[in-house]
Image (tube, rainbow, N blue to C red):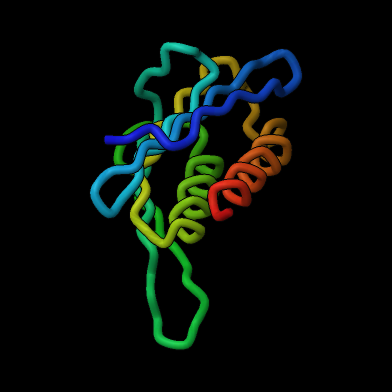
Length: 118
């Protein structure tokens, strides 16, 4: 397991930590508002490859009942961009409404993926 991205962002009054680890032909993504991380919601996304079509991803919720939309969006975004399975562990205790953080968090994620592809 190799740490390949370690970034933090401040959204409103919260600091969100993101760590991306490269595994064998897959990735582990940790996102939390707690520096020590934790297990909150666990989602896996896998790319779907159809000939002559853009790569899409499908996500599956493994554990947890919170932040379903946020989990799905993040996991599928990373999986389709990296063209590999991604296991996402999302632990956001301080966020009551995921709608408030989706836009700034996705902008942050897009910047990370853009950097990663270079």
